[in-house]
Image 1: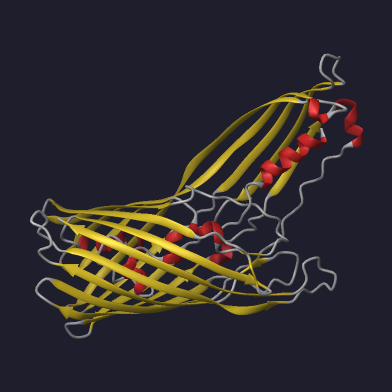
Image 2 (image 1 turned 30 degrees about the vertical axis):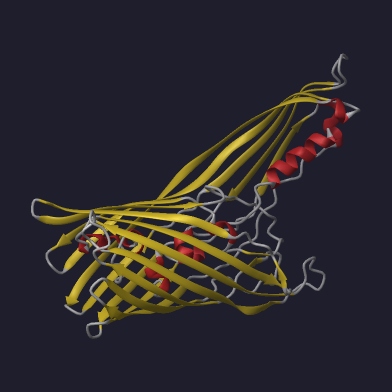
Length: 442
């Protein structure tokens, strides 16, 4: 019986982890936007409009297909020790199809981010386990976005759609006979049924070309809080093979309920300004509602039906989870693009950007250890547009590259209790990322 309980515990704990937002909120969409600090609420001029602001889809005039590949490496440290967060790799696809309906310019867009390692990862650690709560799982999640944009006149456009994030639910059943007193004598059949589901939330935006050289825009992404509900049941008799069972129809039921991830509501306003013929400057201010972030630790419930053994085993009561007390934040972003060369066959753009994301997390002074730090991100990139590159495709081929480094400013966490099992610690780190995007237009 002891061995079976250990198996059950290990299966539940295999879903290790924490809750956080989607991977595009973390890194941006496409190399151009990432290189310009993610300040693309008014500045998206490609398939990344599916993420940044669907109203901008109606400003695109050609059918286009974008494909990006992203690589991110995490060096997140507690007391100077690297936590070993997995490298994040994935492919992002975007398709934009413009057209007209009754003389009105419309456009549809679809985008998807598919991580390399798995479609989704969930971890449910104890709330006392120190970890960076806004990283890790955030980069390991399937994301799909479907949008529609409409131009209302020559200057104004609106757009909206739905985004989908993967979630999971299900259970594991072990059924048969549990050997007693020799656990090695057990005969159990494993049946696993786990479903990947989707959770939808709305996205939308508006854009206004206030001057030929100035565009203003606003966008929002909704909130979603999917719950992971995993159960494990052991059903059967307890006893030795070939003998009368000591307990017939015994049952052990365990259920783990946790917040699998959290997508906060995000609101942003932005501007794009042409300063001369070669320089574009973009700026955003985002509001992220982290105050609704709930404790992502697993809440474990258990029930036993073991006959005469019940008096020796009392299932622990489900513990209440502590409040995390995150708060809302404002995130400024700024970027620029310079047309460095405009030859007959190749146009070269250089890009740079900066963003500052204050931490929504308070200092971890109590029982919880959902660590986060203020984040400074510097980015740079290069874009090439190739004219007459093919006898089949008349539109230019674009290839973009971006590199970015996010520095997590050092932070001390001093516990109120002198006998806290974790104790005081210092958190800091760096996140490195690279994105390459190719774009075909038709």
